[in-house]
Amino acid sequence: MKTYTRDQILQRLRKKRSEGRLIIATGAGTGISAKFEEAGSTDLILVFNSGRFRMDGLGSLAGLLAFGDANEIALEMGERHILPAVHETPVICSVNGTDPTRELTTFLGRVETAGFSGVNNFPTVGLIDGNFRRALERIGLGYDKEISLIRLAHERGMFTMAYVFDERQARAMAEAGCDAVIVHFGLTTGGSIGAEESISIERAAETVSRASEEIKKCGASPFLLCHGGPIENVADLKRLTSMVHVDGFVGASSIERIPVEIAVRDATAEFSELKG
Image 1 (tube, rainbow, N blue to C red):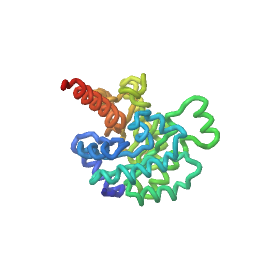
Image 2: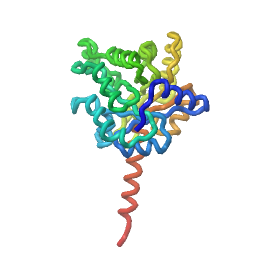
Image 3: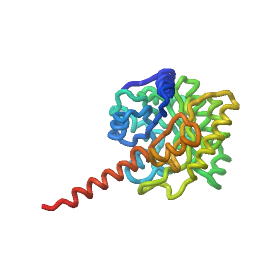
Image 4: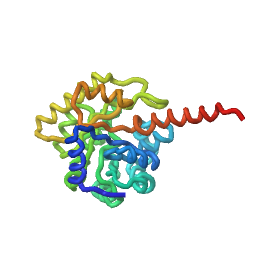
């Protein structure tokens, strides 16, 4: 395990972009995922509480429900499973900034002590809409808490990444000092537990474009990444990048869930066909 300062991570990411290559960040719900994502040259490994549920076959959205303490789960996953499996790649801890039972300054100190090299905002209320979302915002458990988390982490000198869902949030996170704004297109489609439908890649490109233009207005220049929705595989990402500029991609289901579903099924089926 190796930890990195914010400046060291930024230097690594800038170098890759200067070479004309996309930044690839990957979610790891298990040690073996992290080990082989690193072997595949991922640039950043993200630890989400949802990764545990996803790799248990339960679906990423389980990470938004009351099945456990999201912050404690992510911290424990990192300390016990992900960080010990990684040698050179910066590992990012997903922090639930809306948790009203946490003193975030203290918790961020624990994140740093554990060996994480940065944070991002997950679980995020950005994935919630309708009456429930409006109620959360009304009682002070809204997206503004996630912006405050990123601002606090930035002020501590930590590397920060943030999921955003529209141009207004993109600008707010950039103004908070976010180093990598991730335009989230919603739950990833594909596989056995992915979303049944999503926005089109064309609409995803429009969302990225609006976010990019809004960020420019505030004079900030974070890396602009994308995640989820219709981006299931490399071909989908190539289609998106042919329409709009992005600096990189964050893959979770598309990296560790869908490929595992296919590989395990096919290997098992091949063995099952053997005759004695």
